[in-house]
Image 1 (tube, rainbow over the protein chains, first blue to last red):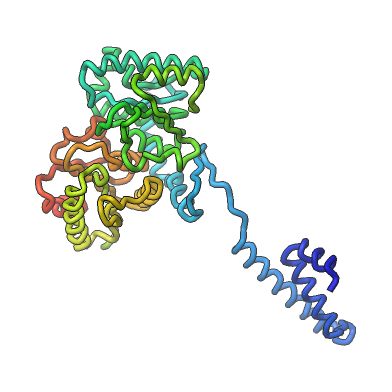
Image 2 (cartoon, chains in turn blue, green):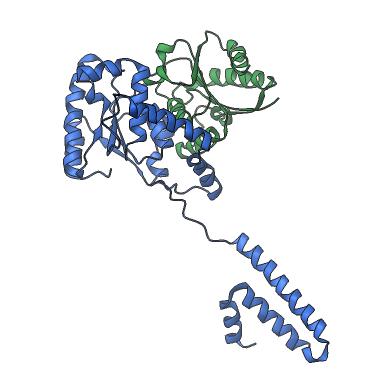
Length: 268
Length: 142
């Protein structure tokens, strides 16, 4: 058989291949359409088209191209397609749930607390409540420097860092009450473009809860982890699963983070 | 009547192997008892699929399964017997962001990480013995 003919029909895909097979069958049996009535000719052509259509449909369904699952900066890698799809359901919130959330957000924005902020470039979370008072003061000043460093290096504007804001007495009162603090943190994470966590010690901290919020809100996540400190099991390899997640380790001091940021050795 | 799919989150990987085995027994009994409730349709406990403390899934696999199961559940139960830097806290944050109906069970609310003490639409209950959990859940579902 002529190989050029085979290559030509294969190049046309399933319909072309079907047409080729049909042609070869007719040729093998030396069949001429002029030998039969026009009604039978029409019936054979319609039947042929239906069979080709059905085969094409099945083939397209079985070997359809895999779609890129990238959505809101999040791409899950190295996982089966079925499981990827399952996770992406997270992005689908029902209208009712979404309306409830919007109502709550709207109320918060109207309140005095959040009226001055609408969108943040980053949210920085760092364990504070479970730290000793002495450690807190030191952490706050180091975090302030990190915030400035990020703003300068990445040319970012508004960065939310509740730990730093607690230095302000007025803000401190708000963070003294978990209910108020939660409202603030929830909305700020939601409205931030990216989420940054600093984890200097293995602590049962709210920061772990905030990573869960950020993950559900599809925020790019960057974690600065002190060397030797272990993250909770499920987020230990978060950077392996999400293209938008990064984990950087530092030796001792938070000033190392500041320096890495200044040199742009990290991705935010 | 059987309408609730439960996701149970609790510290598993942050306990010692001996504590793990003890915890696993308690969870198995709890799951059997909860399955006996007429309102419960399905229960997902990440720890249940593990054979021993040393045979954890990889973090990536566990996260994928757990987050998928949280998405599918309609009641999230967070059991926090002792303060621990556990993935269960991360799961609680994820479930809260998805506005899942949640029940937090702890010895005392003060043991919870700071932000988790002030959650809207989350019921927090204290328990002293594991046997109490079933009746707490039953009352919650009424």
